[in-house]
Image 1 (spheres, rainbow, N blue to C red):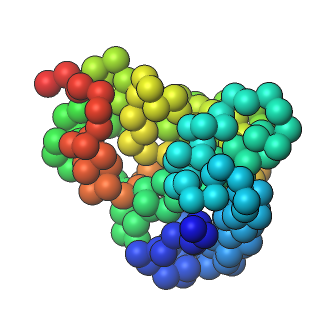
Image 2 (cartoon, one colour):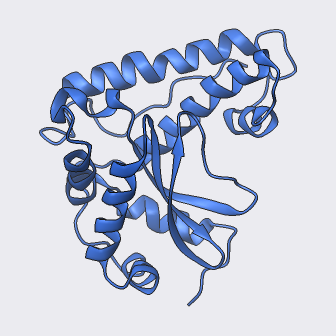
Length: 207
């Protein structure tokens, strides 16, 4: 089973001007597509040949041998990107709808406080990586992961992610990672997707 590119629900120019078509052409068409192609190449003829991306990630994470580490790096990057694509929406962002807003206010005080902490966490993450909103310990938390790493599914459920590798924003924002993160929250984040994730998550959220 070949792992296919995820179909986007929006065009490559639909996120402009917040994310340019040129960035999406490179991000989706080169970086993400490259992770998919490399993953397919690495798993051919192995025990993972018919596995899903998530199965591959869960069975190769933390393995010290080089072949499995290479499989994890590419499969995890592909999975992270697919989750990121779902977190984007033309005309998204702004104030979260109910009940997402109530959950965020319960955890962070206000939606603005959440946004400030999310931007701060992503800005402080050293090097390439990801900043996440996750459901954990019956509430919501902001965490960051480096390189291809992703949240530990055994203990939390990812709800939102923003890609903070330079290829995600450098053409449009240069070194202003914080500006990109703020624009993501104000203009792009798909709160409807986040709401569905909250309803589906395995971690019990406090009322």
